[in-house]
Amino acid sequence: MENASLNLQRITLNPNVCAGKPTIRNMRFTVAQMLELLASGMSGEEILVDYPFVEQEDIQACLQYVVPTA
Image (cartoon, rainbow, N blue to C red; front, top):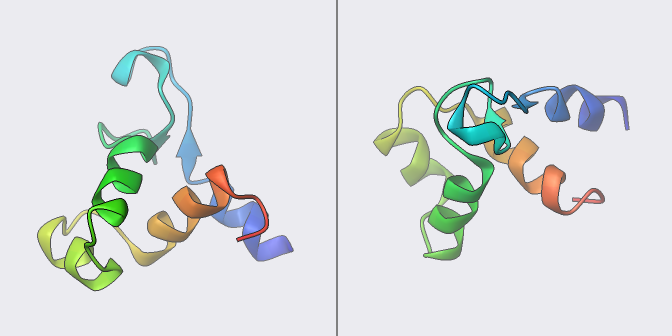
């Protein structure tokens, strides 16, 4: 459970970044964007290649953010 809470610290809410939408590590990459990539069929590995600033833990954090038991 501790690992899950550490991952969720990667999700930030900042009114000055993406209009306050949940983002990954205060970057201009939203949780919604990540979920759209996954829903379109991209694998985590493909996302990591296409978006080198994203880390595996970021993907996990996005999933845990929307489904807390993931």
